[in-house]
Length: 168
Image 1 (tube, one colour):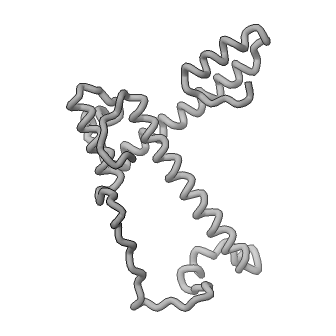
Image 2 (cartoon, rainbow, N blue to C red):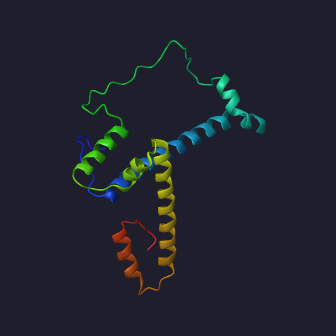
Image 3 (cartoon, one colour):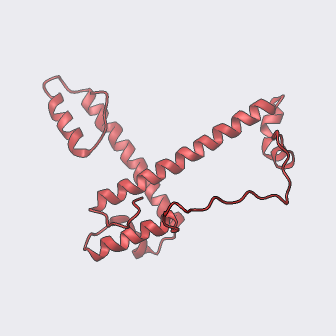
């Protein structure tokens, strides 16, 4: 997110920002799951240990350093001049600036019209992302089936759509 709140140029810029956020969230979840699986595999001795890991990990701690309930790590101070607003507040500020400039954003308009909460809006966003991926895969399949004389058309369409197809 930019340090100064700026409006979205159009609906595509907004969707790109939201999809980048979704990508970061999903990558973080995948990384956490891989780390947890790695830790469980390191400590488990049988299949039953792996299956019940959610239970025994809640009871036992296998970290090398001793942790006490009274000790809470200090949160790092944000003295670097960054805004104290969270991501959603910054996004909402940019949405409001876009509305004031007359830029219609589809997903925020849908959210307001249907009175969706954040979770429901994110489900719609996830559905849009999946639909976009499916369309991109169909597009790639069509491009791969083209003759060499048709390839320049496909490459121009790819550039216009903003798709990154490295297999051309």
